[in-house]
Length: 159
Picture 1 (cartoon, rainbow, N blue to C red):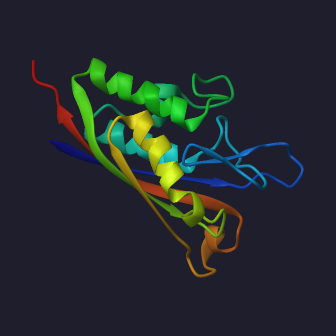
Picture 2 (picture 1 turned 135 degrees about the horizontal axis):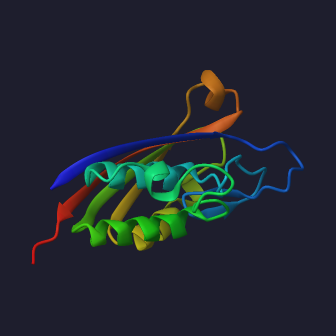
């Protein structure tokens, strides 16, 4: 078994930008997140954790970077499914994962079970989701953006 860690952070899009707010595989009310894809920091951190555990690089290695990348315009849950298929091609399967969101909004508690179900379905194993704030410190505390850190455990497939 191998463990990996991932991190991602994005700023919120300006009000009226038309960007949708996607986080932990779900659509939320409010201004969206800047990024070439949907900006889902929870999914992106989880992708990095999975790839790190399997020694397969990071999200940029798999999806590229920029508006013309393979990941441009894609939703986090779809990118997670692609990542899990990539892991399988290299002989790995996810066993367990955890994501911690850092930010003032949206409030995760009321939809935590729904988000965990979406992430778990996309990854194929149990994914837990927690959330915290930074008590007004830094860009997440000032409400400028949101961040996530993830840990994933993968196992080498036998046979």
